[in-house]
Length: 338
Image (cartoon, rainbow, N blue to C red):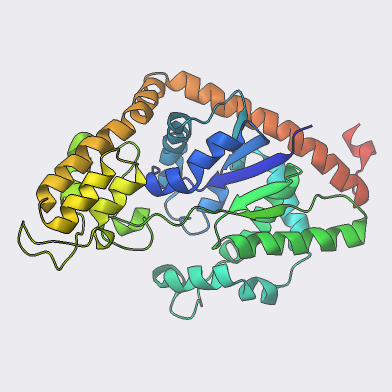
């Protein structure tokens, strides 16, 4: 049997090039090698969007469209909606008994996210919610509900996975061998920089090219991209490594890359011309992705079926796991079921 791999995303907006090169491209490859589950984590998205549930709901199909457009094959991959698997919520409750509040507060990723969300949780995190603090427990439930063997993550999520492994070990020490301990596989893909030179392309930073962006949006964004600030005049030589336009030429593997680099260094290429070439190759790069996305946009009933089928198949797996969990926890009251 193939090993199980689980990944996922919070449906807080459409997906961009950072998602594509950071995870989607690799998921397309992995789906041929593993029994793959991709979780649309709507429950976890509510931890810091609890006052705006409409935002989460409206993005469920958007993120599914991006998955399918990028090449996720529903015949090979289970795409599931987290809130429609009640077994995950049940597992979360059981696992929450096995981790202390102080341990949750020590999680470095949680610390960093609390600091970033001062507008929600206050300067000292005085308004942090139970749900947000328990995010790693919820993530542990996701992994254990599907007997996950491997979870590929970026280095920022590695502390959550280590905490999940701790929780699994404690559970198994109390109730006997029951849950699989997921193995962490760190992504080898570096973070994709934003058009503004920021080390991270992000939804909230306004520096992203989305997979669904049209020509007008792409043109406007690329024309505003940061270039080498030392290049003042059109024919000044520049350092392509300090230019975000060149960065994206490399990212999407422009076949004319060597010429772009040489002309930039010699000063024979102006920034406007370079940006216009990037717009052209970017549109070509995104064309097959957007064509596939358009097909599914025209067939919403097919997207709904894919989500329903993936969720139902995933739930059967979660039900099997929970049956084992309840038995070992001695809360399998069969006489009630009968």
